[in-house]
Length: 117
Length: 111
Image (cartoon, rainbow over all chains, first blue to last red; front, side, top):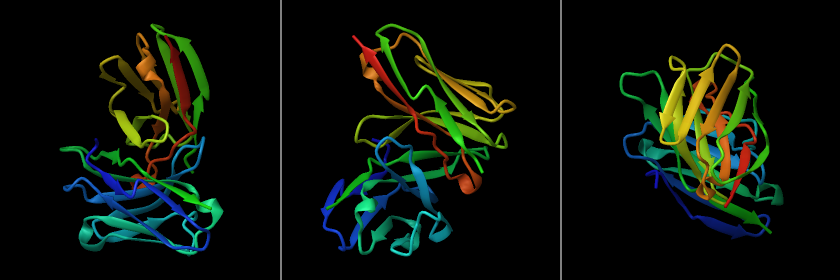
């Protein structure tokens, strides 16, 4: 257990439905990242928060995707009008600066497996 | 744009062998590089973080090296065990600290 939790762990939905995932980072971590991983591939970056500010969004993040991190604590990722191509593992990671370093080490949650039928 | 390649894509070895997993990256202006392990259907577990000022980092039977100038990192696993079977991913950070992943090396250690 890395200390990063994600809910739900699995989600099956029908095409066209909306889904929302939650990530609870390690409490003292100010950075939070979302990634998507499809079968046989490495994770791909989706978006990044520093505290409550969303500072970067990948071109992978279409208009149907939205992410929030109110109050700089937990984060939610919502997918509207799901498509079969959205089926993937959605991973959350959090990080903070290593003491005395300019380096951030990322810790990942267990992921949410989305299946769109 | 950072691109990461891991070779080999898959590896099957008998128990007890020492092995090396390779990672190459195109942009050498990195502060660090993380190695992760991923079991099927699970999240990523951080194994080692090697900073740009270090050449090696060790944890138990694992040793990671980093050569920024050549854009390469290796993960050495000593005395492999069946429990080491998993996918291993290397990830240098891009700007803003987001990690850039290759496709990973899937390792099977046979008893």
